[in-house]
Length: 166
Image (tube, rainbow, N blue to C red; front, side, top):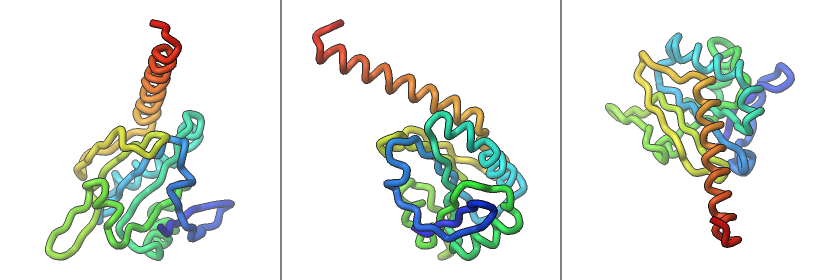
């Protein structure tokens, strides 16, 4: 998929491949077709916490059903503070795969949603939002830490059962 990414102060078009996120938690933030002030604040808030996400082994990716050209324009104006990549889901297939594609009167766009994928690319969390609700980075970081703890517990149980311990 084609995305827009800010690196060294410049906006660049990049090919975003799922392999880049293998072995890491991935937070997908889906944008609806009406970019509201609350949505801008949410995306900038996540961008301001990129270091926190990196510390827990997670990446943040925005998803929008607009073209990559439109995304670049938004990142030059209303989303100027966003530093994570935003991918263009122009055909809606990516959003449809997560069940967040809205189709009305022949037009489509993604619902406002936050999805967390684990290190193996499995969806482990999804939150749908209205125009009056949003996600908060500190709560998502806490969720990832919790999921990492659960994964360690499961691995320990598997290791113990293999070795015959109880």
